[in-house]
Image (cartoon, rainbow, N blue to C red):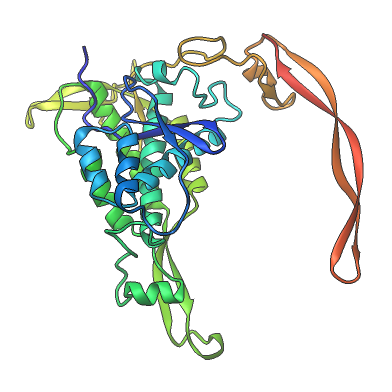
Amino acid sequence: MRPPPALALAGLCLLALPAAVAAYFGLTGREVLTPFPGLGTDAAPAQGDTHLKQCDLLKLSRRQKQLCRREPGLAETLREAAHLGLLECQFQFRHERWDCSLEGRMGLLKRGFKETAFLYAVSSAALTHTLARACSAGRMERCTCDDSPGLESRQAWQWGVCGDNLKYSTKFLNNFLGPKRGSKDLRARADAHNTHVGMKAVKSGLRTTCKCHGVSGSCAVRTCWKQLSPFRETGQVLKLRYDSAVKVSSATNEALGRLELWVPARPGSPAKGLAPRPGDLVYMEDSPSFCRPSKYSPGTAGRVCSREASCNSLCCGRGYDTQSRLVAFSCHCQVQWCCYVECQQCVQEELVYTCKP
């Protein structure tokens, strides 16, 4: 049996009900989904027994659970990260044959597909992003704003310029996810690589934002802080990395005495194989088609598609059904004096295309 990956990271969550969430942590494909009730969104970190109970509900390793119990606010942050990662994955793959469905996820995570690589990357990115934002929002007890020069936390919150603490987030998560260490297991090396691709994608979106304090906005005094870009932009970066992901094998580094990822040279190419770049998503196995139901996905039957853009690919050549439905929308809107807009309700026919079984 293959040993578990060197890094265990927060996985995507299972949305059972609008007010109830189930989450699993450690993308090894062996974990059991653990119920995790929906929690409030109060700015203050959870305290006392509430925080400890939240940590106990998460599927964490023994060491991770200890770290969670010592970090008030972390359990809720992990839950938010799982939710964020899931929603972003489903958005980025909404037009693909694999739509980041939760059905078949456990089978998928046991394999080294491109989709598995994306799951690792988007999960670690969501963790990094959410924890950095939780620090700047004051929802974590042991961290605060970023350490921008000349900017104290109390002043930052007073002026509304508290920077996202990516430095703390990255440092904590490197410890939380596990130490870097060599491994003789190719899958573990690939999982660790993809995890750090996600973290680096968040870092690439860090921007400097400034606010003027001079008289009449003259900017004689300016305060600057670090701010992360919206997570949607990180998701787009990772989707591009998925589209250009590279297939790897393993090679032994004689100098270091450990296994390394290796991109084999193309057949007939005089160039030797190279190590993948730090920003490349890597995978080991070609993905299934995802056209038919399997242990990896529910297939594409019944999926809504665009006749011009996606039906041919999404329906895998099976064709599609066309249905009409009436859709109500606001129309003939007029601004009424002084303070409201008055609209009529119109109805139009809309055609919906769904893949045949």
